[in-house]
Structures are given as C-alpha cells and as structure tokens.
Image (cartoon, rainbow, N blue to C red; front, side, top):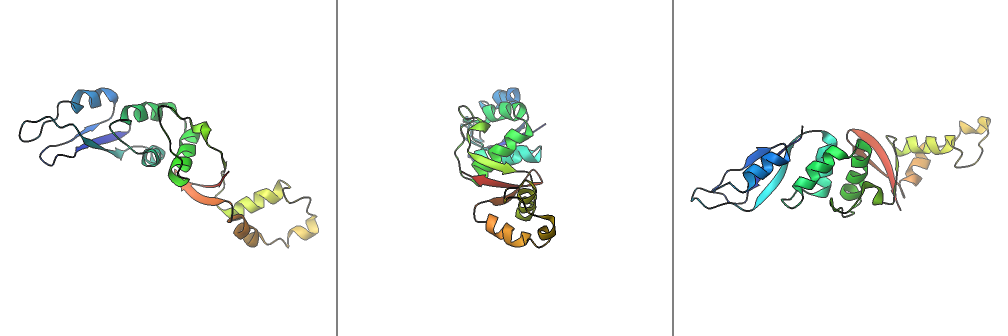
Length: 168
C-alpha cells in the first residue's frame, strides 16, 4: 500500500499520514494549528510504496488538487502505463493531467534494453541495417553504433529497469 503525508504549510500545525482516500478526506478539513485555526494548505509527500509509484508521483507532481485522482489511478494503471508516464512527464517534460490525459497519449517509442549498445545489437538482429553476412558480422563496431544512437535515443532507468526511448 502506498503511504503519503500531508505536510501543512503552517509551521504551527502538524500533518498526517494517509494511505487511502477515506483517511485523507476524513483528516484534511480537521487539522488545526496551535491557535485553533483550520489549516487549508498542505504539501503532499510520497512516503512509502512501490518504486514505480514514487517515480510516477514525482513526474506528475503531488498536490491537494490531484492527490485523490492519483491515488485512484495508481491502483488502476499497470506497470507499463506507469513507466510510460514516468518517462513522458518526468524525463521528456510532457505535462500530464491525471483527470484528462491517458498514458497512451505520448508519441514516445520505448525499448526494454539496458543500454544503447544493447539496442544496437537488437537493431542489427532485427535487420534494421539490412542483411549482414555472418563472416562480416563479427567486425561490426557496436560501441560506435551506440554512440551514434545516442544522438536520437536516451537511456534511463525506470523502476530499476534500464530502458531506451525515442521522443518523436
């Protein structure tokens, strides 16, 4: 279960931990500062949960206005959708509105490989560079290919998994 913390912007108040919408809704309007005034503004922080959920929250941004929707979507989205959002919003700078946008809205090609060199091997195996005779294949400089691929493709790590992506 994912755990969050609502940190008041008011220094004279204490925040609260929550893991579900009911707990959040039950506490958000009842927090008072040391002077008895209701606290209205909070910073929402990701405390504990799956790494991919943390990466998605960091990419999208946690706010009072979207925390309930994010909590709902984190349960709904699978790891591949979360990965796509983390790359698009976190790495590529796309804006993502949890209420309106879909993980499928982005024009990004993602390869599940650990490095550009591994992508170069994959491209050769798939015949992207044409038919390469076996007696010549051992002379291919995959390091040079990887450097060239680095002009268009980007390596990153999402949820502990290396990926390479191309932003269109």
